[in-house]
Length: 99
Image (cartoon, rainbow, N blue to C red):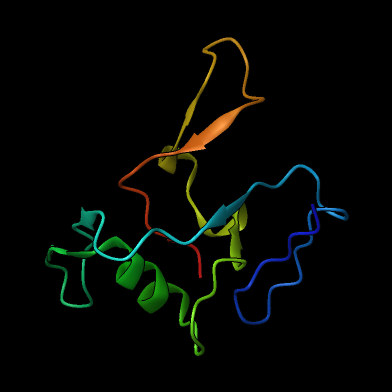
């Protein structure tokens, strides 16, 4: 694995930052989410499009592009085991929040 974060101006790299997790972009049209827009209202939108808009990705998304966990809130994850925070999984409703 040699994953880098694709977010502009982010230098996260899995070999240098092993405590981070790296996430692929959601499939087009597979999930809908309801993030809060700039007017403070919830709107239904394709999850992949929401990620692209929130992260301000200015190029086409490839299957190799990853987003590091720095762009997600702690509540965007659930843990495989309640006793341990070792295996965190991104929720289906997660949209990047820290850009």
